[in-house]
Image (cartoon, rainbow, N blue to C red; front, side, top):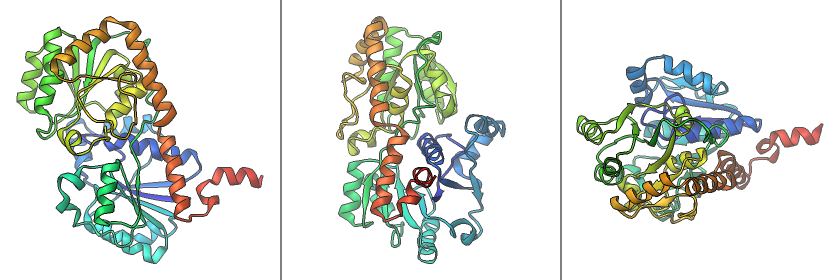
Length: 378
């Protein structure tokens, strides 16, 4: 099957958490015999920031880690050659981080070329900025893939598209795998961007203060940290590592004993059941995980077994100390978390679900399962 995807960036994960799931999904589709093209705009925000801060060598490194991934670029200022790009497509997926004009135009091209067309939403805009959704023209879309039930209900209530499916993010579990025998460099590592003030208080309560109180050897990675944040880290004795390419996350997790997840406020308050990619990454790598409060409304995991939940900053300190002093507890969390990922939350699981969706859309089975059909013919 010919699949064409329009996303913000496959190359860059600079402040772009969706890159992990996108890369893992494309790899899985390729493994199953599909021809996949991913298009991203020249001068995209994430890639431009990556190149500005870290140079073109980051792209060479990306190719070493992902040799099968080869993103295509288009000039957003010029009209695309839609016949060349979409003329032979069976399926087109357009991510919500695209310009409304492009989204509408691809919808119009569907009438000409006859491919199936899906919208992919991995953002909290539908609940936090519903007016912004009005700029999207879904007239010709066959449906939407959204990353949580709460978003699905909003799409259905507003009748934005005819069909909506929940398509949670997941882990590239072959790549994000445990290496707990690695010699440890410290106690705690946290990987995440400071962001736009959506969790400043939470980061102080659940990350910085417990580390300071327990005098842990800790390191924090991420971008968009204001000077005030860097100062708070330094005062707590926390090393700041700056940008960390997503493909190096497994290597870093292997060097620490525990990590934490501190979700942004919109996810806690308005998007119960949507954990973002970070817990999937930690559990997949087998590093013990402790979360600040969030509601696993869709029962993706088993709190208390896959990870621990700290009800406040004091409880976070207590649970961190408990995991660090108990190898048995740490191993139990590590094993249970990894098992849950392998059983339910890999990119392969999400591609399985996508295949079921494509059956609903009446794409011929020989296109959905090309390798299986080639085997039968042989």
